[in-house]
Image (cartoon, rainbow, N blue to C red; front, side, top):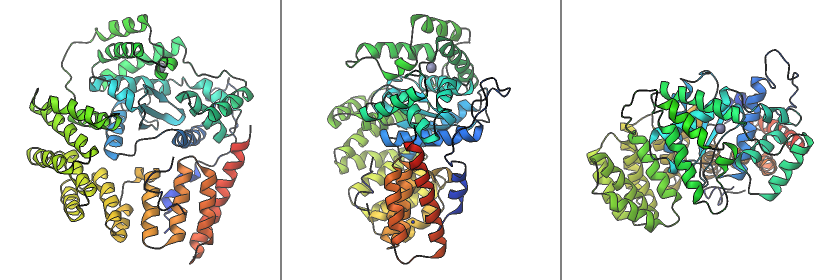
Length: 485
Ligand SMILES: [Zn+2]
């Protein structure tokens, strides 16, 4: 999937951190001990991380993954809060949102846990969302993906990753499904990873423990299962993918209900962040902006001051989507004045200014925002985007260089670097980062083309030349492994 930002570019200061982090991802065949190995592991932790990273790139090629850093930040904080109270707090985890209306959540190798926006919007309380995440975290810590690893062990890492991805997301792409089927047959295993009933029970039990210790409401687990069951009645095209891989039965609901009721009852208020992110996703997911606008407008004068603020925020975002900038900005100005500690409002107000092409105003808002919230990555990156639109690539580059380390493997980071260097007329670097972008989104073929373009660009220094040769070699090796059965 090419992002709209890169389209006009389509044609890379070596940063050494990037290369060290990629060393672990060299796609080698997974050689592994027998099932009876005393460690109980089918693949080593390093291989599992490589498989996880390849799995994530495979997803990028097929799904639209969220790139909004406010959403990313929220889902990662919730995930880490749960992991800290799980059976394996030291294990690496990566949480992300998939922009997809279908109801699904999944746990892949390497602790990559994805949550569809459709599932997020089905939750009626923050603890319900946490209960799904805790369940998925438990699948990982209890190593329920064993069968997937068993299949993977007979394939190269890129092939195994693509196969697991196709299975977990119930791919709609017939070519991909075909490839997955062939690969799985080659690996002599069954097509779908259905967790067994024992796996499900264990993930519910362990997940609830985690939920309670992370101070979320255990009663949310059975109540979410009920929403899930109800939602499946309205599903025209068969049951949600999530129910295929995690079947919800009557006994499962009653078991979790019984267990949850052993805990004392108390109130678990939703965090402001949950409500804001849910409003944002609701606007993003809406088929018709008018419908979502009316939904939030109707709530503006209802409930607590907090609920009314959320309704105004949702209304403003809907106006923004409808390009009614003045109305959107008026609402957000009020919100930023009433709630000066809420970065989401500042961010939205600045974004409106950008879209309305009021660049000087946008610049002032981002600068003020960053003074107030200096660690806020969403503000930082949105400021970079705005600077590029304003024709200030030098300043954009400076800010990208100080962005958080965990941002550095994301496609958006490479995309912004590519654009920045193109604007600075440094085409070798620009192509280099376009290549990295395509590699991250699972399109290695185009990554090779871009790396070759970079290699031919002038001027070329020895340092960059060495890097590009190494990357070309790496990409080609991966292409070979992808073709392997
Ligand atoms: Zn499950």
